[in-house]
Length: 609
Image (cartoon, rainbow, N blue to C red; front, side, top):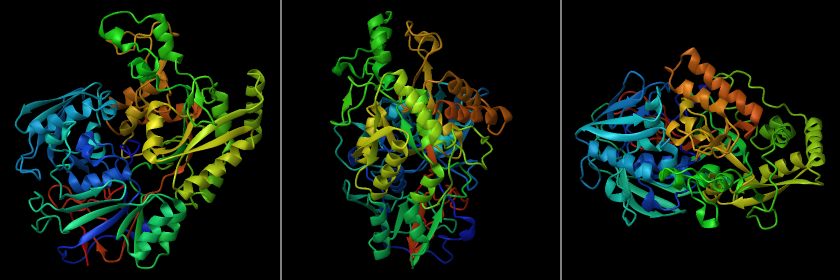
């Protein structure tokens, strides 16, 4: 899920034509692509319901088509499976006209019923649903090829979500049932041949694919595309150099620098894309609890934490003891000895002064140089400095002396002799280990002891989702529009009645907000929430929209739910025989799109020379 909001790339200025084919496409051949990760289970890899990170979007673009795709400048949603999207006067209903004559690889026809079924499955999914329920109340059929997306809130830039998040993909509903064990089924340019999860997935040409290029040639050009999972960033470089893969995605600065000098290889990055980049950061558990929304929703009943939602559903008042349990019932920290969540431990990251101290302790410029090889730029918030949404947010400057004083004051106030946290990092990745060593040194210098918890990516993400973490290495956010990040920062009034959109926890201090289900840093901030709602209801590009998103950024600088580090630079590299890999078009086969998109290329117009 961490990758559901990471946006696409364009060629850098120095190589504007890199990856663009200049001859007649050659048909046939199989392309092998090196990716960072794989899905946990390909049987659930079904469009809107799938759990997609950057590599997941790579595979999804081979199997599925999106409803829309973003234009080359990142500003307009262009037709794909959808022909158009029209809002009502207050942006609370979007009417989507769908394309006729599109078939799935199993022979079924794409239509409004399919679109409704995809939303229904996604909304019911125990994790994906949490990210879309705060935005969409329902999707209803208007006629055979028209649907209405009914919004929870006014949402002026919603079409971006139907082009840049996983709900843009349409899968056949036969795969939605829990007992389904077949292959994923889409309308895309390829279909599944085989899939060894965590190792390699292989796809073959969909000979009935509905799209053609600008010259009338049926797509795709390739006979097949294979995705090899190579977790270690250096190993991916070596695989490309040795010819074990033809293309690959790279996100580590040191290895990106190596690609620039690799013979027989060309590369592009997203450093000049018309979108804010994803950000490398440390995400912090600002409440020192498990996910409080999950507590309220009764998700932790099995471990003895009662939830408030069952009482709400019965129209009853939530007992005081249950309210207290939802608010602080899972207070704790990761035990540095067992590396398990321990409710007997006092949390640290729920104290603002400690979060501020951590921000002041980490020299972001040094991190940028040592860990990421000066590739990208240092970050102080959500936006790059050239973004219209950027205004200096006032993020804490590097000041280890002041940071140390804050830690000492915290220990004195709380009668402690030490302060320690556990940092979750990716296992099997040498760069992650190097980054941890840097954090250990920087935080140790101000009196904070750290312990690493190496985890595979899916486990690290799940722990962050459920709140079973102190601090974790993370990258997320960015995109062609800030609205893509709304659900990740959402919080709800804890004290308002459910009828007013609150949680009904009346014993809490007035004005208390609880972070939404997928607000993984647990920052319950009414200022952030009000600013985002104002931005979403405003026409894109207006002063009120820009001012509101700037307020969100400045609140993060004050509350420090994330320790910002630097821009996550995505680089695509390909061997010289790979043609047209930095090229994509909308449904008409000629209108250029924002490519590679979603950290990935579209595969239908690539060929091998």
